[in-house]
Image 1 (cartoon, rainbow over the protein chains, first blue to last red):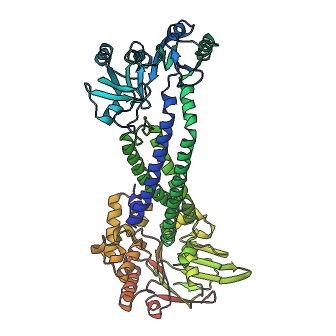
Image 2 (cartoon, rainbow over the protein chains, first blue to last red; image 1 turned 30 degrees about the vertical axis):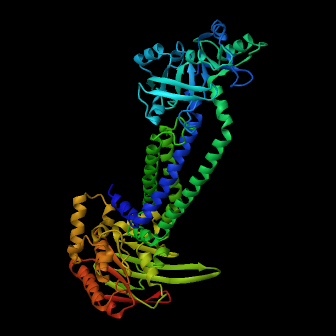
Length: 381
Length: 232
C-alpha cells in the first residue's frame, strides 16, 4: 500500500495518454464482450434445450407437416412420458421488419413440456378459456410495449388472412438462455380457422419428453421406426441436436463475425501494449535512480507491471461494464439474436483477458527495467 | 585523514585496495581505473577532481555499489561490497549510500515530500515516522515550506536541495555527490556547497564529491585528482 502513491502518480503522469490507453482497452474489451455475447446468442438454443426432450419433424424437411394423429401413437411408445405439438405461424406484426417467432401450441400440454418458462396460473387459465388467447415472452412484450389485455393483430403469410389475438399473459424464463421473444397462441384456434384449401389435421412438429431412465437415442429410433414407410415419415432427434444443427447452418456467419471481431480486438490490444511499453521506456532514467537509491530489481519489475495492470484493469472494467449495459438493452438486431446477454463467465473472461494483455504488454518493459544496469543508465543522464 | 596510495590494512570508513575498472569496446580494452588505493575516514569531505573521462564518476559508482570493479576490493564500514550479490548490493546501497546527482534526478510526478520519502519506503517505518523524518530532512535543507511542490515548481538550486534531503533522509553512512553544482548558477552552487559543508561539520556526515569546479573542491577538506585512471 505504501507504494500506491508512486504507482498512481506514474499513471497520472500523462493523464491524456493514460486515459486514451485505458480507453483503447475499454473499446477492445467492449468488442470482446460483444463477441462473447454474439457467440452465446448463437449457441443459446443448445444451452436452453432440454436434455430429456426429443424434437420430431417430417423426415423430408422441417417445414413439411406431420399428421396430428401421430400424437397418440407416439405417446404409446415405450420410453415416452409426454407429447406436445406446435405449428410455425410465420405472420407479420405491423411491418415485416418486426420479426418474432409465433407458435400455435397445444394448450393442454405445451406448458407442462416447457417447465422452464414461468407463466402464472391465472394467465394460463385465461389462455385455456379464450380461443384467441396469446402469451408473449417478456422481452417481446417489452419490445412492442404490449400489456396483458392488449389486442395483437397479425397478418398471416403461410396461413393467410388477418388473425387477431388477445394477449392474456407474459412469460418469463428461469435462466438467462431462455428465449423470451416467442409468441404462443392456441393451435385449436389455428386448426379450426384454416384458410380454404389448407389440409386439415396437420401440425408442424412434435416435442416428446422421455420417461426417467429411458434411452433418448433408443426412443428416437422407436419413433422413426414406428412411422417408417408411411406417407409422413419422421425424423426424431434430441432437442440439443436440433439446436446444434441450426447453429451449424449459421456457422459461417458466426465464424465470420467472430473472426473479424477477433482481429479488431487483437489489433487494438497490440496498439495498447505498444503504447504502454513506450511509456515505460521513456522513464528509464527515473527507474535507474530508484534502483540507485535501493529499490531492487523485483520492485522495479513489480512497479512497471502494477502500472500496466492498473491501466488494463481500468480499461477492462470500463469496457466490460459498458458491454454489460449495452446487452441489457436486449437484442439490437431486431430478432436475429433473441437471447442477447453477456454471460457472467464472459465478463470474467474479459477481465482476465484484460489483465493477461496488461501483463503481456508490461512484461517486456518490466523485465527490461528490472535488468537495467544502473551505472550504464546513469551515465546516459 | 583521507589518503591515496596506501596498500596497508586500514580501518577507514571507505577503503579501496588495488581497484581497477576496465571495459571492452569492440576489440579494444579500455582501462578506466588502474590500481586505485584510497582511504576516507568518517566525517570527511573529500573532493575528486579530474578532466572528463578520467574515471571520476566510475570511481564514485564503484564506491556507491552501482558498479563492480574488474579487480581489487572495496570495503565500506567493514563490509566488503565487492563480494556482495546484485540483490544484496542494492539493499546495502539503501542502508549506506545517499546519492546526489548533477541533474537532481527527482521524480517529476512526485512532490518534494514524496521524493524525499522514497528511500524511507524501503525501511520498516510507520507513516508518522516517515512524515517526521521527511519534514526534518526538508527543514535541514531549508525547504520545509516547499514540501508539497513538484520539482517543476522549484528552481534548480531548490531541486538540488530536495535531492540532498532525499540523500540524507535515511541517515546513510556517506553521501556520494556527482557534480552536485554542475548545473547551477554560482549563487545556488555556493548554497549547495555550504549545505554539504554544514552536513559534514554539524552532522558528521562523510561526503565524497566529484567536481570539475576548483571553487567547489576548495570547500572540501581533501581534494584528490584523477588522471588517466590514476588517483593522486
